[in-house]
Length: 66
Image 1: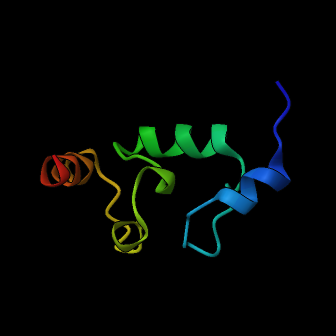
Image 2 (image 1 turned 180 degrees about the horizontal axis):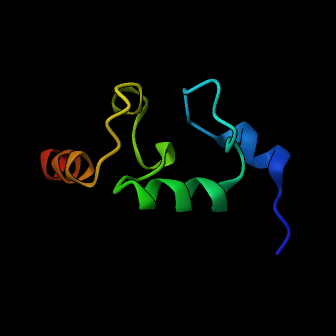
């Protein structure tokens, strides 16, 4: 499968500016899963900007919206 970097970068919600993985979804997901986190695209902007992308933060978000 070919990575569509330009299209991915346009949709990327990551606000961490020096990120070298922007638009490289396979690298981003692998990195964050290894850190017990989800990538920015799993969160709304207001939560993503806190940089708390942990599984527990995701679970709290889902429960609150339930």
